[in-house]
Structure formats: structure tokens, C-alpha cells
Length: 201
Image (cartoon, rainbow, N blue to C red; front, side, top):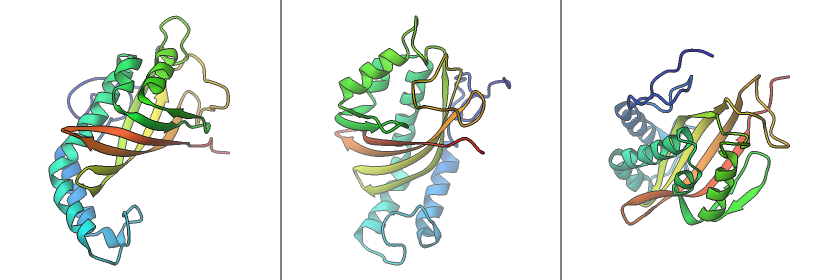
């Protein structure tokens, strides 16, 4: 395995890919993509129309992207610690998670319990795993909802659950989309969709 690289925040999680872009770079990226959303395939909503949602997105993106990065950091830290309860705490009480093989988990407790099983230090398939998050985009739909797109790479697993196949030897890659919501002062994941990146023929 290649030498692990430190994360953008200086925390080494034993991964071979950066968890995310730096905050300053991401902030600049968000401002640029908001201004040029008409040319972006990931733009949310009509790309040729201005309206209240577009204005709101430009305002909130500059001020709240750090909160979303905090949420990503919290999930990355929970995975690095193999702490299923802490991982589950990044979701809302009524969250829905669609996993890479199409299974649906509903509710924070169910999601937490599933990851407690996956991280079981005796026989959990992901007990010694590492997972890296790379931010593709963060778009604010309103001041309290955001669409987050991530590329995730899973390595170091002991074995894979049925139906989950590696994208390449030793690596499972997924495209992950979150609908994150702000409750009080806290951002949490309300919906997560994971799409497995199939092996290259």
C-alpha cells in the first residue's frame, strides 16, 4: 500500500487518498460554480433561470460549506475509529440509507447498528478497513438543506458482504449523494444514496 497521506485538516486516517479539498479551495470552488451554474452538469434546478433559490444558494454556500465539511469530518473520524454509534450519529433520527447493493436502512438506530456489526472487532467485515471521502460538489438548495456529492473508496476490508464487488483489486469505490439538513445548529444526513462503481471490464 502507498504511504498514507494526511487529510486536509492534518489528521492522518491511514488512507491513500485525500478526504476532501481544503476549505479555502472548496469555498472558492463553490462560489465559482454558483456563478457559473449554467455551465455545470451538476447544477441544481434550471440552469438558465435566476430566482430566489439561486440567490439563496449563492449566499449560503459561502457561509455554510464549513458546516458540511464538519459533517464529512465527523463521518470520516467515526469510520477511522470503527465506531458504529458515532457513525450513526451523523444521520437524522428518520434517515434513509440506500446501500451499494440496493438495501435500505431506515432510521439512525438501524444505521448505527449495521455499522456496529460491520466494525465488529472480532468478525466484522470492515473491522480493519479504511475509507476515504473526496468531495465532488456541495450545493445548497435552501439555507437548511444541501445536496452533497462524494466519491468514496473503501480499502483494508476483511471480506465483502454478498453482492458487493471490488471496483479494482482491494478497493470498493462508490458514488455517494447526501441530502443534508440543518436541525437547529447541526447538519445531519437525512438521505444517502450509494452507487457502486463497477469493475472495469
